[in-house]
Length: 277
Image (cartoon, rainbow, N blue to C red):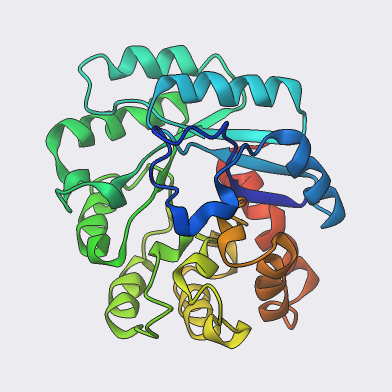
């Protein structure tokens, strides 16, 4: 079975467009392109990846589709479209011609309206995704989990995946509210969860593997082994950990699981969810 990193990014660094990459993240204030990741994946025995948007524009889609056309190890793309647009179906129909365009994402975590995903125009866009066999990545902070539960309830046939285990407050060791909200997703079998991005929510300089175990336990108990997938969040993870260390946290936690279960986490579930070839 192919080993797949289900969540990473490429960009040509632009300090204006990429203003979210602040000076305390200076290690990633540069270009990150496929040739660099291809070597990293090879060293860590991964066969491919899913590239996720980091800029909310269709120019981003063109950039990532070009990367994917030139690099076979890029197995899928999660892009961006304006889901609130009255012309959204036209855009979805257009992107359906590209076999590596697998789904879409909106940076919900950055919206002032914490219930942005419940806006009727946004939900109208989501309603059209299944028609074109597209998935949806949910990027949120913990304060949006209750709204997100209401959101996914409205679309029982749409495939969703929660990015970065919904970014719990690992640095502050806060778990109770996040846990209470995340376990509510257990019964929704169309909702998956990415075990990704955790190191950026921890103390960047002083985290230890044990900091993540309570959160991983909740995620596994909630989603089961069939609805979780590994993602590095490279290169964003580099602000707190190397690729090897990020993977090591997850690898060590799941070391007692069966080989089949580990295969699902490190590839099988991503292949199923995104329909990767």
